[in-house]
Length: 125
Image (cartoon, rainbow, N blue to C red):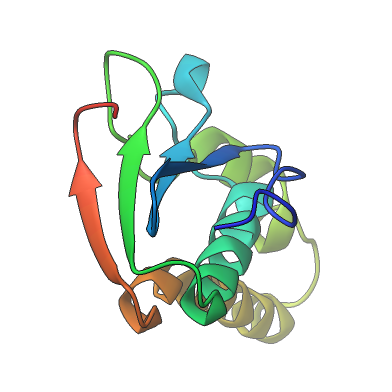
């Protein structure tokens, strides 16, 4: 895997663990690697890109820090931005919320759609 194209991500470290094996590390340990919107967008971009990278045959996914692989969704951040923070009538809020959740699910599901074998690890390589 070429490091080019993977070094600009803010919340993930993408490195070559060995020839043909890529290590993707969730890198937000102070927040227990909890996801918020910019992170899940990056997550989707990374796995979509790795899926098409001919130098990659397998991926190891891990979380930075000693306390958690990932705490899941950063509920505080989610409540302060996106469709939760939007004001308006209930119907428009419901549509915005559904679209927001769908975007989140599509990004997180990118690991499932990825054409490369992916392994989640609690241990850092």
